[in-house]
Image (cartoon, rainbow, N blue to C red; front, side, top):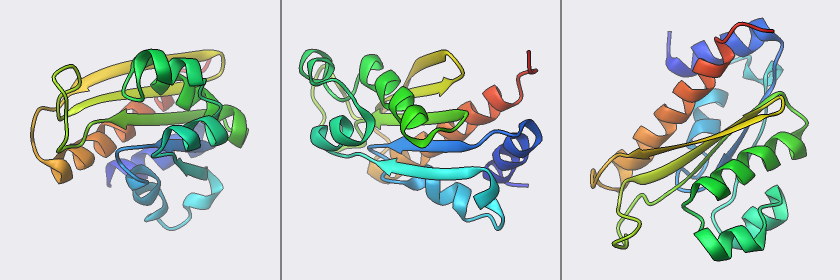
Length: 159
């Protein structure tokens, strides 16, 4: 069974619905989930928010956060996840914002990706430095990591 199928199964078992907010992956997580027949019972929607404006308009990311930290930051990853959760009215949302490459900077190198996950009252951010694997590999690794984050939270015991 694929990782995406395991995520869907875990969400189904918990009675949770999923939303995604993706920047550098351009919808790859949503695509992985919707590649599976029957995913519509738990996958609600995906937001592809590549620009600053779309992050603000669709997810409510604060202009001040973007100005102070840039799109590739813990703050923006958390705001994207929380915004997707709120906008979709789901139980869990994952967000990805990073530098797939090329065009990295010294402070934000290729392969630097921030992930956000929001569920209930909790919002977490996590940084993964994949390194200069090339654009395609960074995007694929990022999508896989986001699915792993979803699975990890969905596997937590309910309180």
